[in-house]
Each structure stands twice: as structure tokens, then as C-alpha cells.
Image 1 (cartoon, helix red, strand yellow):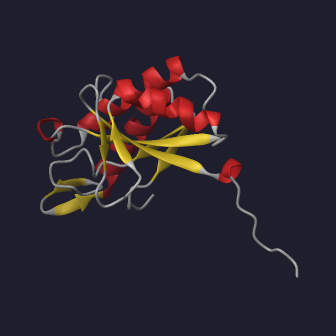
Image 2 (image 1 turned 90 degrees about the horizontal axis):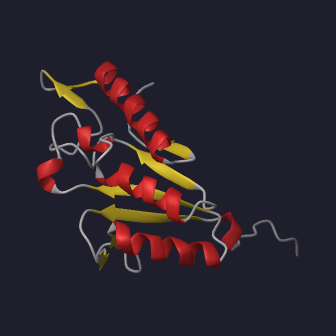
Length: 153
């Protein structure tokens, strides 16, 4: 029999969900075995991921509700949860490749991937903000922006 598929730890990307606060390691009920981490607990987790041979992580920022707005500005804010986490991870775990989710849905107060104008998603405004978000993530330490927004362009 010929083996067609081989899966090993060195082919995986580990998802990490980052929240604001301190001392947080909270299981995500809809994703057993996955947790939300504050920046201080994140670094320990990233070290463990690196030790077992996972070659990269993808970070998803989860801002506080009061930081969300119609344009998702917390997604590219230098003092926002994702940029701060990327900066800390780059400094504390410099050899671990960091991928950053680029979408606005988690940062908008309406939960959509794009900017709403006149009761419609404004694709052009959204693409501009997604570009700004990707650049801010790379400037903060991401090796690779991962575009996940459900937008044209």
C-alpha cells in the first residue's frame, strides 16, 4: 500500500487567541483544548509550542468590547491587543515565525469584515483599512500577514 498523506508536527501552524489583561489562560468553550491568552501567559505558551517543534503560530487578537468601533481601528492600533502581542512575542520568542490574522470582523462593533456605509459593505474603504492593518502587523513583528477577510480584492 502506498501512503499518500503524511502529517507531522512540522507541518502545523498553531492558532493563538490573544486578549487584553494579565494572568489570563481561559479555555474557549467552542474549541476544546484552545485557550485565550493575555500577553504574559502568551509568551510561555509560545515557548512550549516552539519546544515541541511547531514551526509557526498565527495570532488572532480579541479586543475588549469598548475598543471595538465601526472601522475596526483596534486591529491596526499600535497600542491594540494584536500589535502589542506581536511586539512582545517578537522580542521574547524571536526565532518563532509569527503569522497575524488580517481581518476587521473581530475589531468592528458590528462583527462584519468590512466598513459599513449606507447600509452596505464599502469594499474600497475596507481594502484600504485591511492594507493598513497588514502593514501595522508587520511593523509590530509579524513575519506574515494572513488575509482572512471575506472581501473582494
